[in-house]
Length: 605
Ligand code: ARG
Image (cartoon, rainbow, N blue to C red; front, side):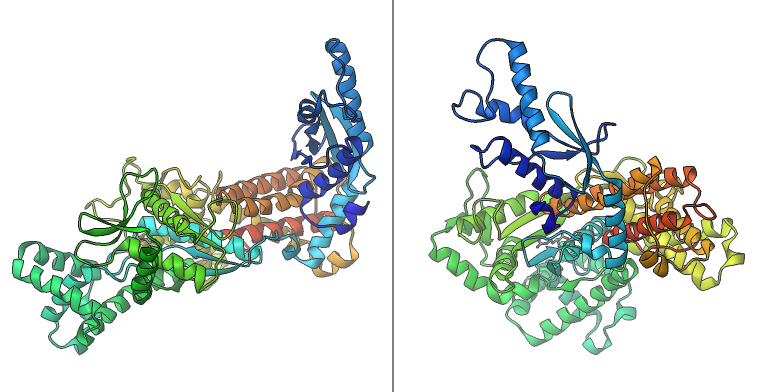
């Protein structure tokens, strides 16, 4: 019972603790055996312990221990001893209110059936104490998630949308786990393109006071026009290159023009963030600029920086190109900034875990930056130790033709247009369902946004991020199948069941009693408790960083609920109170998943 009194950890961890005690008693000579406990779908049990087989091969032949193998006299004898040992693991399992029964099955498994009373009590406890009590505990205090990070004057495109959505979810999962997250927008606001943009701006607006969003119009078109000048006009090109130097040396006029261009771009980005409900704090490339020389000097003093073809570089074992930290013209680049930003995040911001979300195309860049940081002794060589860095790469977004997602004119697709279309389509679907007559215009708008934007996000997150995925409005806005629309409707339906009962759910939580007698209630209840495992997914997200696992959990939850609801009458039944509590628990867990995935729930449909 001692292990249980602590009452910490998720289901799997708690069972593992019990099996630890059993293994200690069964094989006292082997103190460091890690219990192998896994959820199972077999009809024999909910969880199983798989230690017996491995344990046998590990300790066979060693003299003087309880759990010993047979002398070499044949298979029958082996099986006898082996079985005896498995039964010992089962017998030595401490009494626990968690466990209803145990059995031995298959090639050496101990199966556990959980107690439905215990399950019901724990779900009810979560309802009273709040879903936060089911949050995982991570061993770190502070993390940086570097995500979205578009480039100034260039349009934010679908790749940035992926980074924004995936990064936001990872940040939310860490925050739920009680980690302070610095949500960093590493905007590309410093680079050679600014020379040309500034010179072009001076030409168009001799008086900088005249510069504003409406006067410039489309910043992307402005970028294109200036690039054209740059490519054909040698004199302009020369001026542009000099402008970069003047900007970097801090000349006032140049700084001012730069700031104006950034501001216009920024406003556009933040409109998209606002629509997506994503919170980010900008520390763009320019922020790290003053720190670059010091960092390069320190790396040079450590003997890491070498001359190569006029540039200054860091060589990395196993990679045939070096990391260029100072270009041959003496200027800094993407890598100089990333080395410095990493130094800053480790030393000034004291982040223990730094996560970068970009397309997989940048994998080598980050691999080199991380390895250089290890050479410099900034990071431990062992990736399992903190502080650590992770690159979260993702695949391409494809159009219905299977090629990179573009509009007809082969331009990149504007994010704002995508969001507009998602909303328009989901609104049309709501109107088709007759909601225009039932709801206020405001309700219609808000639901259309929640469903439309939610659909775009979910379609992205439900895939393993490394695979390419096809952007398809018809598919993502379908109200059947694994889509946000289906899930949001399922949630709204649960809310309407509770509303229709006319009961005060706050009161029921305290006075009612949840039971899991029907088989479908039990399956749903177990899945709810396994949110602990899904939040273990949050912990695993710490190594694998895969939001799709949470999507899978949510989809299965909804399926389990549907099965329960079609087989168990709720309102008006003898079990009404208990079943309403089960509905409420499902809705609470669904809403937590939605919030981790950045999706706004809807309450009626
Ligand atoms: N601005 C870059 C791009 O659009 C992404 C920046 C990612 N973050 C970083 N620290 N390098 O590709």
